[in-house]
Image 1 (spheres, rainbow, N blue to C red):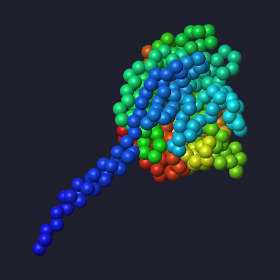
Image 2 (image 1 turned 90 degrees about the horizontal axis):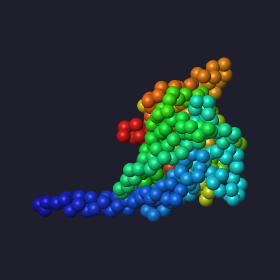
Image 3 (image 1 turned 90 degrees about the vertical axis):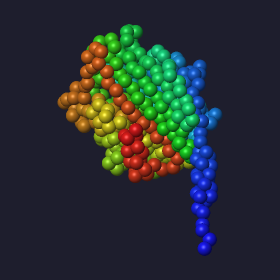
Image 4 (image 1 turned 180 degrees about the horizontal axis):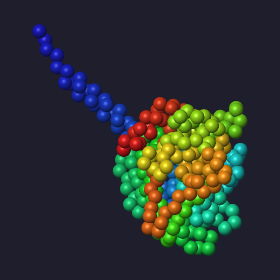
Length: 321
């Protein structure tokens, strides 16, 4: 009786798997640019961290899962037809807060606070991953420093054009006591483009959270993550999710998630989100001089409609890392 030898078939199968894996292999690179730090995947722009001549650092553009920019262009560009030009302080993807020691670092009205990037270090890229670290000084209108922060950004190129951006920040009371005041205006934020709006029933955008609250019901709710989806500028349906790490302060966070494309994780704005207007300092949080507060977030830029089970699985994956 002839004996079968499966090993060649196993080797062939392994070879096919290796070929399939290599087909998805991508190279992520980091380059210091005139504006800040540029992130490329296989030679094509993913995003740029902009620090030069701006009121606060931000990521712009942000290329989504289908290869198109998913954040609003305004106010960096004012020539995009049909794009809303409200809230000029909503720039790409950024971190700030609307009440820090009584100073507004969120909006750009009279006497607002600014963030100054004071250093970029530890640029590392290998294969499909890369990271870098920055330091930032929060400055009052009179020029005095209020606090500092250290940010670590980690980028991962996934198959099919999908991407991860991890945003880890440590807020440091280096100058004296710091109070993060209770306001809805903050904090870890992204402003999406017009395709993600759902102001009207027939608008193309949608949003939901881990509890399956949908569209306008998401605002002010607590949830470990929130996802938006809609068409990018070329009509491809793509999704964007923000996950909050469960070890964050006051997790699960409240969501300042609007029908015009802004969504932000905010652990401080309790009286606004829970309509406790007579307790306007309910969400205040103080750091004594020398104390710090670490917050961690992950952004997922997907290709296609983000399904709830898939987003829950991605959140679980994030938590386990």
